[in-house]
Length: 355
Image (tube, rainbow, N blue to C red; front, side, top):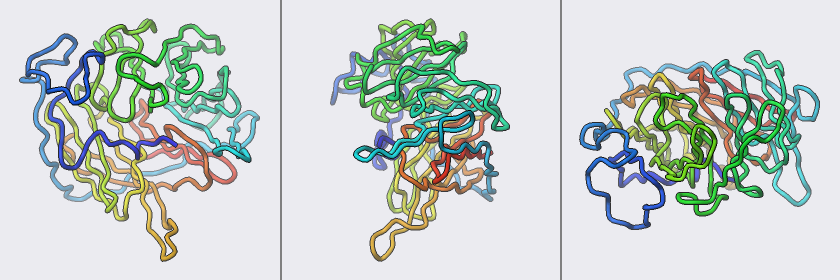
């Protein structure tokens, strides 16, 4: 199972201070740092657009965030249901990922039932889009349809229209993506005024590679971002966990910060790291206690929101999965700037919203 908890692109002992956008193919492991000059495709000059992170101030009074159930869907294959399967000799399978569009609709990748299910904000199914196979692991809403990540069989991004008809296909393998199975997320930026518009994939939780241009044709340059992008900003986010009980989060770019986010329990893995259009950073950590018999007890998913300076705004606890279910992207931040969790329960899925 691939989760953000496996990410290691930021260590507690060394923090990258440069935001770089570059073609992926010149990158060589252990290469010397690039000279401090602006390059083609760079977001501003490193001398003017970037600032070293500062240690974030402690929050004066962190207020609880509001956590609420947005959608419930029982297990099954009917309308309003989502697929969950427990094979006898394979990993249990649950909906792999979710996304939230600008209208507040929640898109769920129901690959067990070979479809994408779109719920409105009240939990009513608006429509479904058929997909070709059960190997898809992430999705992104696009104008007129959906983009699907298949990193294991077709090893491509497949673009579908609203009827499920394939319109474009772009291979994952290439500069910046040595092995398609190492892709850990899909991101699509559709604003025509955005110089970085296009389809991007995250590789091994280290950064983003643009694989397709806005017209959904392959990006020959294969630009790369060394972190997760913040909407409407040149900031990039990185995070790491200390199992003893804190997450280290950095924002690289103008007025960047380095924040130590404490958790009341040891961290098993990080479940999410996102920026929103209000400049906030969201980090989620799956925490636990260990019993005398070395069993994991008192598990929870702690969601923390940071303000643009890295100070804590508030936090909320969400339930951990109740049953096993392989998921690639169980959390997201929607276009409504709320945090969402796709929770796997015994009788069905619950989509939690934190605001």
